Length: 146
Image (cartoon, rainbow, N blue to C red; front, top):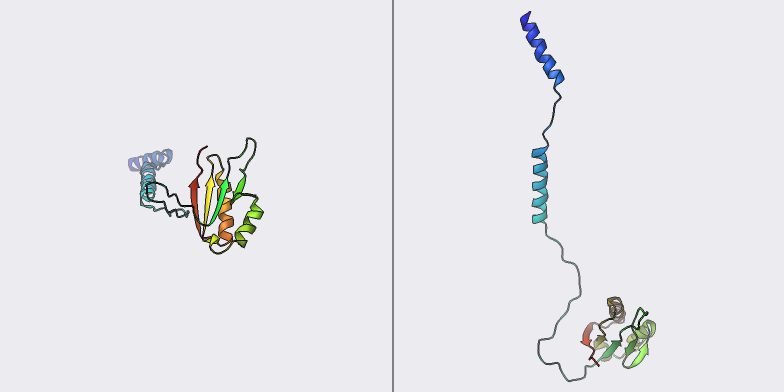
């Protein structure tokens, strides 16, 4: 009879106590895996524009050959600066047409001169037009301060 009471008492204790799972070791493993994958991951390089910089030294005095696009700083309240192709004012449409009608010698290289406040989007749009017109080499030049 006492054995029954002892067995009954242990069963009651088991029923009263709720099972619990300790989450600490699992959380530790998850954090270790996160750290491992962060350190072991290699990121793919973002595609960009290949830039070949000139060697340091004195700038060349020779006038560059090819097409020269000069972009002035935008006026206050304006979004884009005025574009000049070989000293003629142009728009994007006329710029593309002039790129397409240029001689092969002129199409060899395009030089873009821009002011400090010219938006990057305007320069990139001109580069895109030049690539579509078949101009492979694009250079950048500084506008002399006045």
